[in-house]
Amino acid sequence: MSLPSYGHWDADPFDHPREECGVVGIQSPGSHSAALAAIGLFALQHRGQESAGVAASDHGTIRVHSGMGLVSEAFRDGDLDGILGDTSIGHTRYSTTGASDPCNAQPLVVDGSNGKLAIAHNGNIINSVQLREQLLERLDCRFDTTTDTEVIAHLLANAPGGTWPERLFYGMRVMEGAFSLALLTPDALIAARDPLGIRPLCLGRLPPEEGDGWVFASETCALDHMQAEFVRELEPGEVLVITADGVRSEIFKGDENRGRALCVFEWIYFARPDSMMDGRLMHTVREEMGAQLAREHPIDADLVIGIPDSSTSAAVGYAKESGIPFANGLVRNRYVGRTFIEPEQRQRDRGVRQKFNPMPSVLRGKRLIVVDDSIVRGTTTPHVVELLRKAGATEIHLRVCAPPIKHPCYLGVDMATREELIAANKTVDQIRELTGADTLGYLTVGGLLDVAKGQQAGGFCDACFTGNYPVPVQLDFSKMGLARTG
Image (cartoon, rainbow, N blue to C red; front, side, top):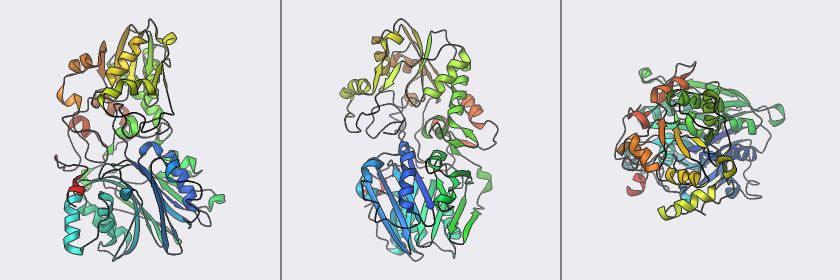
């Protein structure tokens, strides 16, 4: 599915997982809810930069506006003036199924035996090709996109059951994969989270000046920007239906032995550092990851720096634990356009220099500990190391908060193929040699999970490190699979 304030962008040569998607839902009586949804999407921009859109329900009529690019590009002055209604959903996209194309921008609207339905989706349905074939055979549905989201929409718009929770529970029984959904009907706003809770979703309450209504979003930072008070996170398998009569919640009673499997990369990288999950601030969690990294891989050095901005919290944690001073050694250019840097290898060195500028007066003559959140392909880390050496660093010791990534993600993160994952094909020492670093240390899976679990007993999906997927996966899954089926 889906240039944040601190993350990365489409066609980004920098070596990180690609973002997912962000969803919001608003019920705000007497207000222009689509405008409020757009504010929430700005807060979730880091989760996807390919397209953005909103849908609003106004006296039974659902209207949609979507566009390509950042939220600021998708919503120009006046674009939302006609998207009226006090109930709306919104989406910002990074594509994990289907190309980055205007037809795949969300929210999508379909019509079925259960009426009209608008949908915004974060996640990935790994059996979407099979489900689409079944829908075509059984209902002769018309598909206008190449996304799994449209498959979910048609499935739910025609699902058996007299209530929306019953229809969503039917969907949970037949869909395999990850999803957090924002759904809009002519008279209801619906939130749903997959039975394993792989993708995050939280609920908030709007203040009286905003109609005393309800809001849900992928992250709590969006609630903050919409001035909503955090209420709680949705439970795995929960369906929340908000109507004029109030709020109703039901939880899927499926295979209770499957447990909980929140994507651990939400904690390492995806969620904004000012978001809360499981009652913990992501900035603090990442500081603890950095501290654990310092305990597992200590080294004598002069300074600790982070790769800005996503690794700053972990670098601060490493510095505190080790007693080695933290410094800002790289400055990130926040205004490099998304299309400025081409993805070809010959452009990578220029791309690194355009995004990062070292400060030689800070780095010259220093032994550096350089903290990064992850290494995926290993294609650009050597350029960062070279940049630091040219700035005068005498030693570079790489420390990585994600364990070696050896397996692709099929559940909503565009990670890379197994052939492209450097840790799946090289040893740690071979990776160190390729990057040009003096030493290289990864956080262990055990150390990561010790930090992530903290005081809560829930589980995490760590399949990209271990290969232990929480659901059966198709190892030949392709994000363009629906495009090939026509």
